Image 1 (spheres, rainbow, N blue to C red):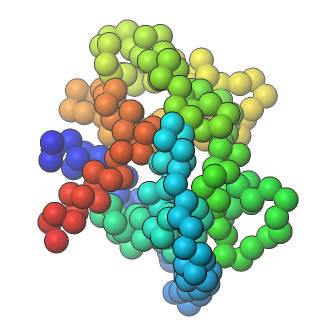
Image 2: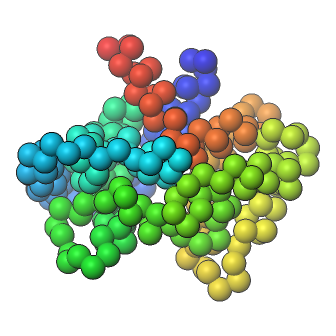
Length: 231
């Protein structure tokens, strides 16, 4: 079990030159101001005692709710940072993720609302940030579609029924790619390629349980518990 969780941890927390470059380009005062602003916004929302509970069958909401540290239904950059740190990721990756993710998703999850420098992500609307050319495992509302998940392996796992090879992953991506959806195709490729490169086993296989853990969000809780037990 510890070996499996450690593999997940390497998957999410492997250092990257891009993260280092990002931190170099943005000075410490800018980063401090960004996170401080979001912390103030989060502190203000703490006065609301009504806690947000994700829908039980909405795996996308459950996935994102891990980063909603005060459970108010809104994820601020400081919470994204805290979430990544909670699962054992370094400061560079956690800071990059807090800026990249919140800046990228905030507007899409807040339809009809104005721009906010605190870049909040509304968990209940996270399905609005889904991109095209995906596997369809999340439906339009963010719910997990078990048949679509199984379809990944019944259609593309030719060598092993519960794992994907590199070539089979390419086949999956080509099958899901929509002709005029260049952005979605690039995002899907980056997600799957990164997952395969960092989480494949010693035999070059991407295991079904690993893919499932990414979809249902259980990965984050496992990593946080493991880290807490070591403290």
